[in-house]
Length: 125
Image (cartoon, rainbow, N blue to C red; front, side, top):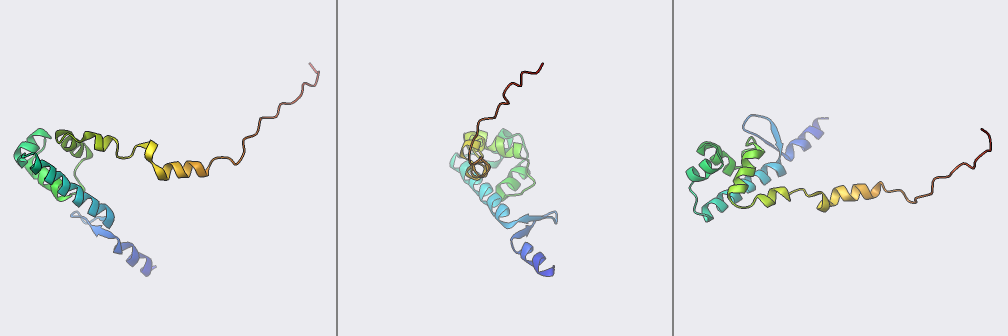
């Protein structure tokens, strides 16, 4: 039992509030924050201007740019909108391109499709 907990911790990262976040998720959030910061700076927007446009505080924007997992998705979506990249959020998990979901659905398809048998009329009333 002890061994499985040690393995679980090896791919988990502690959040600031003490709860545990899977390491790949933490890394993805840090990368997203860094990418948002770069996109903002490429557009020559200050943190103050960006925070005002996404209707949040500069402190929240800084946390977003550091990859803080407590930032609401609405704030992230507003940042994408201000940067002109909202389509990247709306296309993020498009069901038409969800390879895993489509594969799972395909596994559940029947091997054959048969016509439903009809019972012949018995002649009884």
